[in-house]
Length: 448
Image (cartoon, rainbow, N blue to C red; front, side, top):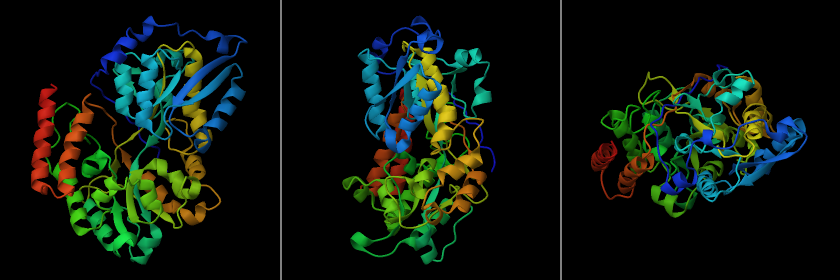
């Protein structure tokens, strides 16, 4: 298997709410010393708080923490779940904890924007000096570069790349092979052929979730400039790829090959349930679902899951996927920074390998052994087509991860509003494209 490629981040500085600014005023260098502390340097036990949104038992965090504490008997880790299985709400909980002066030590950020926003206001501790004390450099230890203006404020945790999961049983019944490369037009052709039945028991060819990602699918498959705004801050909407993103959704809706958007929002559908229950034959999703497809998640499917590469905008384009994931950080006002660093470093290296659930950013990760672990289990052989998965991981190039502006949520909303009107029959494709382009350009202009 090819080694996963490095991912870099470029960033424009951003600000959070004034409340958070006030609460966290002053730089990290003005806060408590980053010395070794009693936990690492003496016999006194130190307790650090680890904030996240994961289920400790399901994710194996309880076992990871037990192993870490065994290796570091003077450091005790207290797992603090913000809002279970809700990363966005957990970010709000973390901000409130910071604003109220609560003790924090290690925090997981759920995406590049959340990470960059908090780094920009000195909430996060730079980690390069700690690595230097250990005789290490970031890029030797990790293959995912989290640098912001030359400093690393996070270690990469799980790393997500994107692909298509397919219900192989339904694929076989329709006489369709597992694609090894394909375009979005071919994806929609498959969706149409896989759709059958009527009413509540209808089998749909595909499902598109409520994330903004599903309104700019071709853009997400570009190695650079894979969002509605380019890395240089200019609009990225006056091109065929942007229009194609909305056209994909429009065609699938008109052909009836995708679960209707109105059902998705009115019934509050979840991608996991829709695919695992066989309601939709194909799902564009991220690599966190690999372990679940092998039968190790909250829902176990009764069919074999195959994998296909992320579709390209047109034939001959390189197979590529955007990359994102978790950012494991140390709070700049932690009273136990050295101990927090020690845990964050261990968690994102040995810990991620021990967990064996996700692709990760550790440069020394044994990719083949990790995939073997991720696809293991009592029913894995009959539930997952491992050969197709290995092909996808080998064939896919990871795009550069970057954040260009602090008002990304406004841009996403501008796009989603127009797409929603189109899918609900309030406007046609041309109007949706024109309005989205205009609104996105106006937002960019207003924020420059």
